[in-house]
Length: 200
Image (cartoon, rainbow, N blue to C red; front, side, top):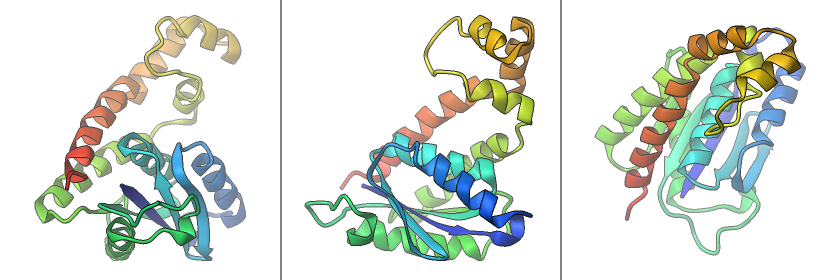
């Protein structure tokens, strides 16, 4: 199982209220077993449905640059509750420990992972930070295109161009600049590693 613990960074934004609203809007779009909820003013907890959901949540947080991020991998007491505040087990404890580690690091994308294998933790953190940095530095124009893309669907450029009132060539260029296809491929590779880390 995967548990994600988040701690907002108010100093990283100029409008905390607006950033918080954007964060909840992004987290509401993540496929979860237990939806994200605030356990306190400085702690949000959620249980993504699977490895892909965990990566999706992390990238959504990295995009906003508003949170320290801790990912815990491991078992949870079953049956796993549908409310994040009732979740207990190894993955939950590891998520909280990873979040504590993330708050003491100065990386541009403050992500920490705990799966019980220190070497694999470091490798996963490096991959997630690289991908998170790529996502975080996209321009508004690139996000306007990326937000309209559906993974795995071909021939979307013309429809997106009509929605945005730009040329299909401009859409294609934005996709290339954004590194969108590389992100999708990288997500798949990281998910495989997370699934490996989740093996008993």
